[in-house]
Image (cartoon, rainbow, N blue to C red; front, side):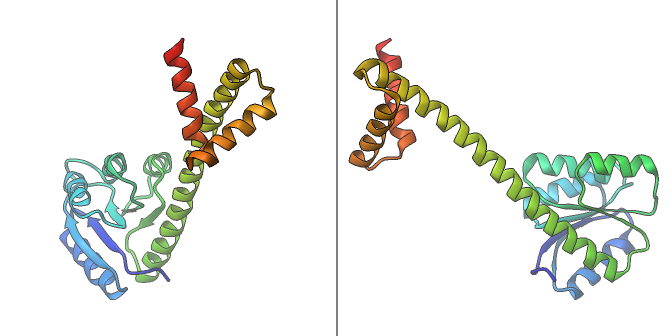
Length: 194
């Protein structure tokens, strides 16, 4: 199924926390702590950096959905919500908050295993997409700087576009630096001279 995970759990019912502790450990996971409310869960996640959080929705002080939002503000961690209720409003809030699984009590071990496997897989996919989007944004920003540097070379050295690009590549090779770094130096030097 999945590798051994460090899991934080939260439920205001001590029996549920005990159930999670026993069941998750029997499944080969480590429960890094059990919180009784959302505030405690947020602090627990900050201090233990779990691989996964499993939380009840309705708890005192802060509900599980709000706790999931606060946790995600600090670092990405997949969240599975647990509830004794199937209220459409709760499900809608969970969907808006990118919760990866929703279980209705009573929870069987097989349901928990499936939810964990799905949540971890979806979380990995979301993380990969997030990284891909960040890489694309960076590539676009780099391309803009390279285009500006080519423009500087075309203007200052009287080169056409292909020659300006070849000059950038040659400088990059000669100086053993990335093309973007050479382009940034040229743009910075042009700004200093303007």
